[in-house]
Image (cartoon, rainbow, N blue to C red; front, side, top):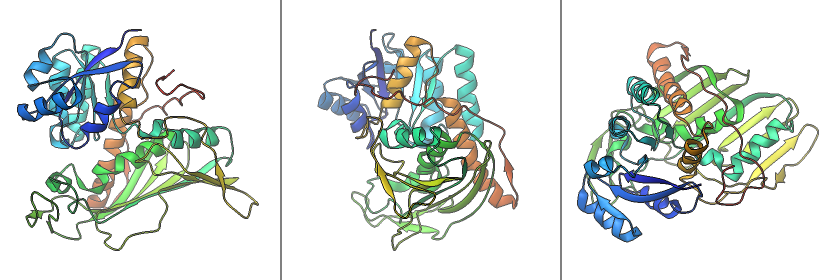
Length: 366
């Protein structure tokens, strides 16, 4: 099966790992990159041995079937729409869009044109979370009854070279890191029925501590501490806490899932590997479970490769637009519930993504 030729738009911080993994999988080959800064695209292209060009050139290239959109969140929807209008499938970094309205536009245009939309994160396809999916489906913790998820930190302004967008609308800890946690929970427990939450902006201004913008002051436009509760369609009740306001560190777990017969500790959903721990009812100690699946190192880009394989075979891709929109709506739902003092009933749904088969070669997806 011939590989799908992919082009990348956006050559910032996250692009490196996509370039590195671009030739790794059986279904996809990144052959060109573009950026609003054409010289940066050309430099990246030279670094990785591919063509660097303008956005207009990459969208107009008839050989490129798939666009990988790695722009900033505020540009996600616009670039996706441009790619779809050009007749190309699109895979976008999280979140799918900043607003629900733009997310709907992307999905509707894709449906109209018969094109695929995929969206990060794809870390749920790594060996760590895939092992947890298998443990739950095989009944190791009995019937799931609840889950907790925690992402607590002090914010990215001390290390990121251009951290402003993290504190603009479409940023914040929920929109930056929430997709990893919510996507993992959906992979484990299925879609969400309703959410509620409370939010705050703890520090109205932030000072950049990294180069090249050291000392610049940023205004904070979006909540930076969000506590949410969600009810899953399948019955479990989950809690999620995301924060850029925790300056002293935290020892809380990343994700735990509680069942009628045991508890499962899920690894960091921003990684692909383990460790995975379980304590079944009656046990006195935790047991580490060997990973049942591969792709446990940094396999970022596997979601795009899985979509490329789906385009060729006609099956549904796992990191798909419907799940990404469901995550987007839930994130807005936490904010809406806080602002309105109520519960937010989800209007969208999605399928629990199909697990990866056991025993796949590193490059394989089926």
